[in-house]
Length: 345
Image (cartoon, rainbow, N blue to C red; front, side, top):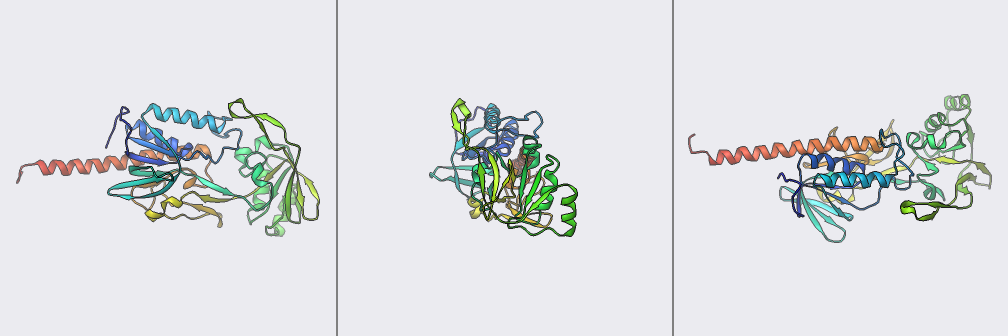
């Protein structure tokens, strides 16, 4: 089912890519360059939208997320890739391929599917966390540590990996405080490690965040926005406020995959050092899932992957998808040739 870039708009594609972030675009670019008819279906809700820039991505350091996506879309279009804006409601088998149905009832078909829908960060139930997510409420030090270096950094403990988080963030600041909140109390060895690194430990439950007054800033398209103010402290039960300019939390990573239920592809638990951190889609190193014809890439398969690793995994998945299609096309060509051969030849 190979198509050139001059292919007209259509309802059937070699590969339907669900999700238009770095992973979806990376796979679509690889497939487009392989002369495949590829469609990217995207709901327009990138996970990293609140961030000012993408980091630790060689050649793209500091690039605003929206700018990277716009550039990626242009590159995909250059090789014949097409886009459909909308949210996928379901994906189901349709003959030898798949039928993807959007929430508004539109439907397209793909001989193969690539799921690159990413995940949702489910934050602890503390007022104010969502408003600061991606700016001063953070998770990954490699994505945001440099931007808050040498500032007062708090770590909100909600699980057994909090001490490890605090020790890691100590690399970026000498002023780190571990708020025990709802997490387990450190054991003697962990207390010794925290003390040796000068990390303060604060008892009590965090009830909310304190912020400075909001201020104006220039947003996308040069429009003026209110930034909601900057984090200034963490408020404990009882009213005590501890100064803090950045708060580290450990969200639960929930893969966006409910639409795959008709295919029998269910999320599985994702673990880190024996601790469940959320869900993801099971996939091998190329992105192939247990459901024949369905691949997954990016955070949908790897919850801890950064933007650069999501794009790399998607490129690998795109190549694997193309190889799978080539194998099928070769098999069909051999069968067709055999059917045309004279009897007894």
